[in-house]
Length: 329
Image (cartoon, rainbow, N blue to C red; front, side, top):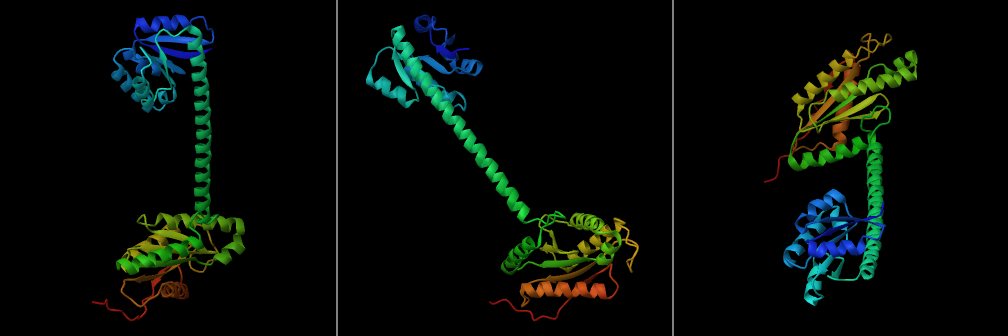
């Protein structure tokens, strides 16, 4: 199949152009009235447009501009057919995005030479577009890969939860917001009860499965989009609850205890239940306060230790007596 050429104009213009090109077997010619050129471009997807501008010059230039704004047609060269070669006409044509101008009555050989130049331009345009698309695709794939790497760098490979590094960064960020906005913040430290015994009894493969299922139960217990649960290390997890005071943290902790128990993962050597359970230590801060970020973690850790010391499968709040700082006037 040859090059597709659309000739748009009245018979006075279209017929002689078509006749001059008809013997060239490398061309596939389509003709239409000038006012139908936009719809015929969609229909035939030509590689070149010969557009009659011998009359209604300004309206024809408006059509050229519309074609050039189209995502596909905008890359098709337009050869404008003029009545004469007036400089102002040609300047206006090129300003409208026309690739070349020909004068009505041009001989067949000269016309075919103009067409060959236009097809060469079209090949260059198409090649450039392919390179742009390839570059765009490569950039998009690179961005997606970088996003995936960034996401993977924040996730724990086994549980799919946020990892310790992500926890540290998130907690620092939330702490700065707490101090800036004077909003509450709660932290839960969660530990699987008798997990070493579980691993020794059922093996590390079952231990990994247990970690994954407990992680899912903890994640499903969160109430709000800003809440984050991370794998803190080993069988221990940390939960950041922004904008949450003690009462709200207690609700989340109770939900976690219940959902882990509901998993009914057998642990026959546990001393508190025949199934896997967790212990939770909680701490909350409401600024202004002298408590530091390190203090918050230490207080939650102390609460977790207390929960394990007095029986496990429970949660405990630690409420340190810390000096309250009055806001400055």
